[in-house]
Image (tube, rainbow, N blue to C red; front, side, top):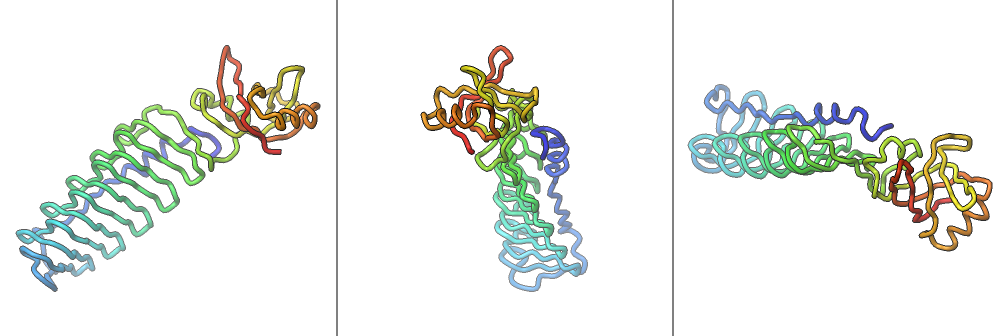
Length: 258
């Protein structure tokens, strides 16, 4: 992703609006039969002519208790049932590699759960009526995270968090997203330059995009390197905690990568 914000909500809406409507028409059992065990009040195996199959506990002729329903197209639900629909703890696996593990209510994701997509995206948190709703974390394969309060499948204007595996930021990323990055430790690459007693990190040599760098809390060897080797400027990666005061963005330097 080139931005911490652009396009994300559309992706989440598209992916997380997956309802699990199983469509188990137990009252219409033509071309279906119990091939093993007790499919009335006990444990049995029930199959359909289209290749679908349910193996598990039955009550009054419908799934109730623990059971596994497998669709001919490769989808599968393993877990608790109530009156013929998933209800309680369970795992739903799609043939395309998507997977949900967690709580169900009346056939939908409801309660705590984890939804993992085949492309590596993952949502961990609360669900309601098949959508993320409540506290949750959406993590992308590159380590970028959206953390906060969700409502009806949408994140409610919460900040972006970056973990240690995230890619190094540009100075322009800091300028664009300072409101969500303030107080966080981030790694930024750019052109470092000492100007008297002050230091700045530019997007690149000659750029007008920059942030201020405070070096007093860095160790002596780091400060020595910056003074001697970067006296006329150098390309470098710096890591530190960001702050903003009177419109000036400052990084409290923690470490550097040469």
